[in-house]
Image (cartoon, rainbow, N blue to C red):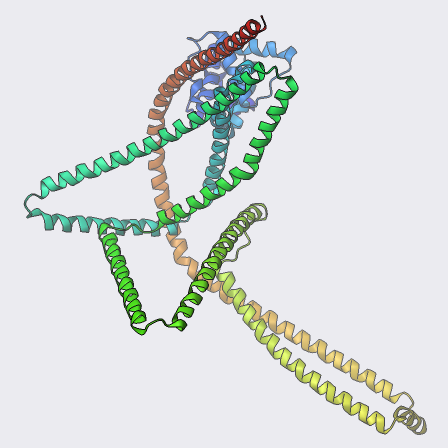
Length: 585
């Protein structure tokens, strides 16, 4: 069964080996080993090698490292030598289980191999971690890995979500309309400018100007990044200079280890205060600024004519305001010193100040409200991921509104009936009190009358019979209402079912046509994807070779740089020790 499964998977896509059980069983050890390497190459293109051109020790080390990345259960130390020897010699009892395990979990292992290229931590010797630059690069590498994890999770989530063909068609139709409108506008402008003399040089000049503006914007962005990098470098230089000066002062002042430790603790405390107090506030300010910029970015773009018209409108309003102010000042001056107007002005100024204060408070409250809404959205998103979405659809909301209106109507009617019954109960209670007040011995009189007539307990039996008949009537009415509701519900469900069937009939027909179109498109896609994969594999092999060479060179450069800093620090320490010895002498 294991061999049949391996042969079936190797004959399937993406391997297409066209093997039979006899051919697979007759494979030589080198061919079997090359077959295992080909399976690994499908997961990671960096494993594409020819076993005839690689030394067996290097190949075995590479295979074991890749199996360790894939979380393959390697044997214990006493049995691992036998497995290494079996891989090197291409033995069947070692290669077959590896092939079966890999082919059985091929999609998940492809994903794990892809993620391992970016998430496997790089081993760095501890003695090299004294270099601050290396520590910063390592922290930045960890941060980028975390960002990669988050982005990959979002991509998987988006891929798992069902697509919405209706929204995509609407968006495509909108974009197509915009494209047609732009094409018509371009044609109209071309017709308007064809007969104008000197338009071609003007068009070339404007094109060159736009390209130069784009180049200036790009250079400005590069300059801004370089300035930020320079600022960070200067800040690091100042921090390093301060630490160096502090160390020199401690050495010159014969500071003890406790003083140095106390000083370092104070620095750590200051940095902690900055992280806990200053940086969150700065991050909040930058986030708010980014939100405003994003809102402005998503607003519709304004043309130069719109800007000019808005500037003209602003200037007209400013002129009007200035003219109104001048006319008011002239009228006030002609009337003399009007104390009431001055008082009103003073009141208006005070009110304006209060209004500005309240507006600031309102803005702060709105910011808090936005933060609370964002937090609520996050919590609701997390809750929906755990327990599923809780929002109602449009149809459910409509049904809920209808039911709510119906229940409100029933509630109002029953409330009015209850108020009437309460009023009637008050009147009956008052009547009972009046009757009892007129004849306080009414019960005794009735009992005596029942004894005289020979019908003792008549009233109790009559009250019980009335209660039983009322209860039976209530039960019968409840049954009747229940049966009516059930029949109405069944009729409604049948009507809805027929309506749904009639609504879905054209959609089902359209779905069949779309499925047919999808099968044709899918066939064409698979054919082109096969061509693309062939080209991509070759490019990926070249890319992996170049990346491997670049990684080796970068590793050597980093190692040399780390050694340089390490020996420079040792030289500085030795120089400081020599200076101290000279000073003591």
